[in-house]
Length: 158
Image (cartoon, rainbow, N blue to C red):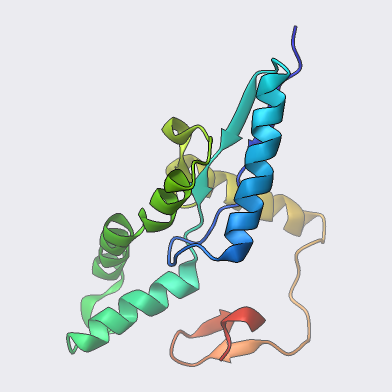
């Protein structure tokens, strides 16, 4: 039996376009995938995009604000519908750029981090990490967004 080679694509955020960092990882991963294929190994380069929850929420809220509405006006269910609508309209931009670059990923298996099975897997992983004491609530400074009512990463702070 041949050894297989599986390479999950670190998912770029659904909210943006490619930058040089993406181009570099795509080039390196494409080289690896093609190399293993040339060796005759069954190879899977699994593509996908990340939901970028906070960034996506911010963009959808900006669109709502431009319409004179807020997420609170819509309510949770309608707001979530609006986020999925935004993802359907705008979410394919970065993967279309990757395809135009010639990335040889298996595009028939493309995944999104909010896909049903993946969401369950993420919840399970966090539960296990929490049970092992590896995810915990600590006392340290975080970047709090009063508009989003959540913590944001250092990268998302202006």
